[in-house]
Image (cartoon, rainbow, N blue to C red; front, side, top):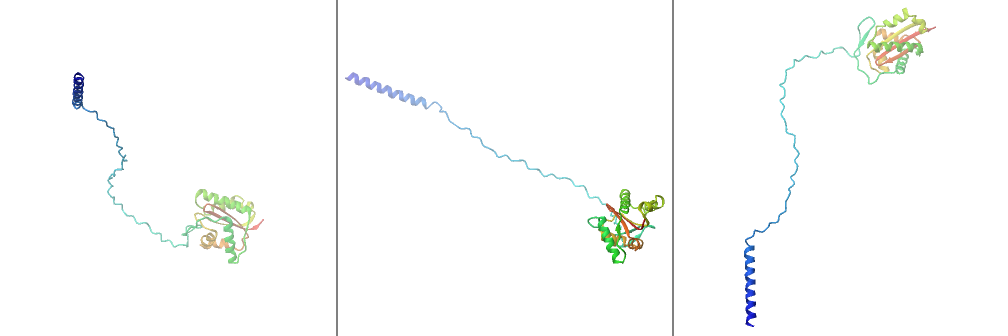
Length: 220
């Protein structure tokens, strides 16, 4: 019995010694540290435009040239040569059509006691050839083409009338009333021509701002 007690006592002492040794040496061994890598998202800052300074050129003194003042009176016809007149006038938004010009012309003639004019196809065709030419040269010809046609190209017989007259204009974008009552009525020769009571037929053509009115009577 005593022997068994001694064995148990020795075993207990050895167990205590072993536990002490384990504790002692474990305190000397560095312990592993667990960690987690952390990623920080940095906001992306878009580059802003850097203001730049540009040297402005030094102001250059520009000599002042006064604009010539146009003292020409408005709405007054002024003769520039034997057959040509000019007038300072405001323009309309759109150009008159031949039909609008005919209506304005007949209204104007009636107001002054002249007979109504009738359109004639040959006169219209010839008037169209005239405005096509004016459009091409960007001007009028002082009736040179008209006179040449009558004198040298048998114009009276080709058009079929014994008396013919012409009013022409270029560069005036006007409605029918303004063309007749401002431009063509602006000087005595053109106004007398469009009001002449002997005329009974007419041909009217327009191209861009070119106009031609061929007056006629004595139909063959």
